[in-house]
Length: 500
Image 1 (spheres, rainbow, N blue to C red):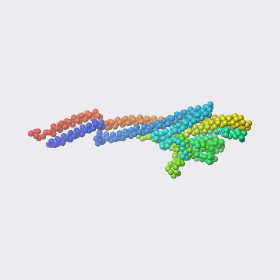
Image 2 (image 1 turned 90 degrees about the vertical axis):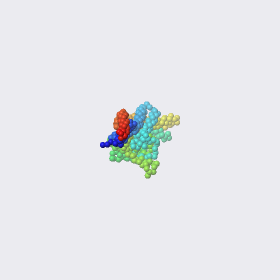
Image 3 (image 1 turned 180 degrees about the horizontal axis):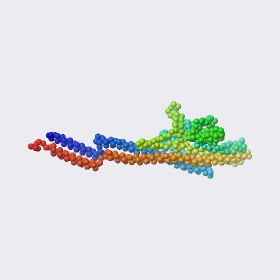
Image 4 (image 1 turned 45 degrees about the vertical axis):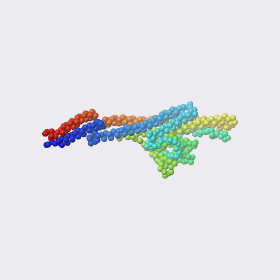
């Protein structure tokens, strides 16, 4: 076969170009630090790189966004729960002080004011937010847990459920008197002959007082259910002297001002065995104070916005209570519940305990004022014998009433201690549950960080060029390239004239 100069030139150029291509590839590896620049260079490396980088992006999403967001939500929740728990501890100390028999009414009134402020602050903590979303309200993150201001335009129909353990005894003073019952012109000693005494009844205390029932409703009836059986309770005012005096044969009273269902012994025997949620009552409330818990977070309710027309959107809304867990995906196929629902940690009980104690202390303050008034009247110089006898008898009965009411007040302070401890037990349980979830989140974060490091190593091994090896190969290829140029220059320059 005859080898021509053109063939040698062509072959030399092809070989030089091939060497130059290899040299260029090595130069690109050196300058970019990567094994390949295009998928066509090594499809296996390219496919593996896409898969590894996809996993890395997902992992980074969990580590840099999802997990930090979940941690922030849990941190906000834990801070609020810890603050509530601290306030409950202070409340327990106040209740404990109030249970001391040596304190004056003024002292107890001061303690009561402290408890009222603790209650306000505790329910304000329930409105804790994260990134503009309320953390204790389930899916309704745009609605506060408690009312942020006094509210009069929302009317709620609330269905509340109870069990037998919610039926408790209550002691009240009956046959009571006040200084206002004394008339210097007509009152006699006989008007005050009935001695005050305590009466025990049984009750279910609703989560709200000051319900939407006025004087026109008094004497009417309201229904409540025990299982599938329906009963009725007579609507009576708290000012009715027989409000807490019920017959043994099945009579029940409903007191809207205090939000109580009052029963006799016979009803108690029936109700006390009721299972969870077996007792239910539906009632109306259309006025709420700041810091009152919003019913839709706790009960099946229908709320009517009286500022809107009947056919307007949002005029009437129905809420059904259900578990509303907000979950973050913190790993591949792994979710974590980040929220704690208000109904599981903060209930109406503390506020209702403070409200009831307020009414009792106010009665004691009023009784002290009545006793001072009667004492002043007895000290008047122009008092008649009949008036003195009537006032002396009234003073005696007021002192008896004061003693009985004082015992009730002391017992209520003691009951407040028990109630506070029970609430703290639930609060501590919520904090422990949150802590367990936080620990799980931290373990997941640490595992993902390890996986991220491993992925980075795999990506580097798959994609990154070995610079030392690349430099050696580059120098070797450059030597070959230069040699090819030199040989080609010598071989191609030979012509026929060189042999003449």
